[in-house]
Length: 311
Ligand code: NAP
Image 1: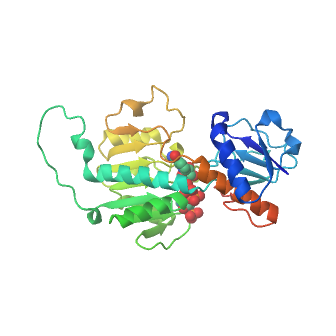
Image 2: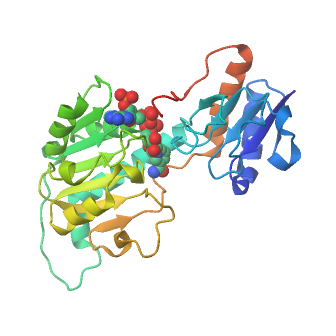
Image 3: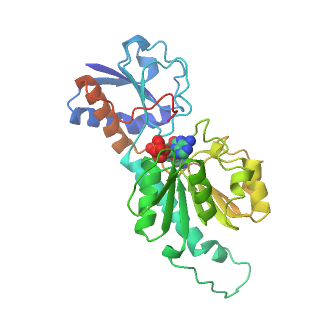
């Protein structure tokens, strides 16, 4: 019988415990599943992990074969020097659906100019007919699992979609760019810019005074990736100068976003509280169970993190 440690947030245990029990039995695994207080570290075979959970030192888990993250972003664990076990990130159909819904909703809101009609101060009848989707340039930075899913949905809606990633890609219906020159080309097109990149040393402050200056006047920025992608002072300056017309931000350097942060009060910033895409226990539990099954069968793990690359 395997021993699995649930090292996610304790509040999530009531949802994950039945979901994991069921998913493990579906793949034919017998396992004891418990919270840290109930298991000796040296008895643990697999660690189901989230940064919101209690584990920060992986050294005592001498038998653990893998750390299975419940989060897609792994920046808070990937550089942990005590982590010698394999690290897998979460790729979950619920997460991808959530991200597609948030991004599509926000792109349509910006594209249709719906904020113009929200909370009117006076009964003013001023129609502004938006262009149709093929006349709207949307750029998605990051063409991984989530970025590619969003770019694909936007392309199916008819938007003129450009994507950008570290390595070159060929995705039908999307103009795929890469490298520094590709970034400049992409930003110059971006009437609506969506950032779905991981937090790594290379992506930190990718949107700064210099790169924001490449955007078309009045561009809309949607950031469901990570707060570190944006130099906050540069974004606020670009908003005040009108270079950036609106920003909807889901992720921040400090979360919860401090009450005195200028984003809260800015008239052209919408703050959403890291809700773009949540891991869903039922589908995530199936991913975890399948990875444990693979590991026990000597098969390659899914969604293994490249520790040197950082994602
Ligand atoms: P992923 O599959 O690992 O994809 C990452 C993408 O970013 C890849 O296309 C990668 O390029 C690209 N990339 C990485 N570093 C780059 C660089 N230096 N220059 C250019 N492109 C670079 O990740 P994912 O599952 O799509 O998730 C993306 C991020 O979304 C996560 O890391 C997390 O931060 C964020 N997220 C947010 C929420 C939320 O609720 N707001 C929820 C889940 C995830 P290559 O394809 O060439 O490697």
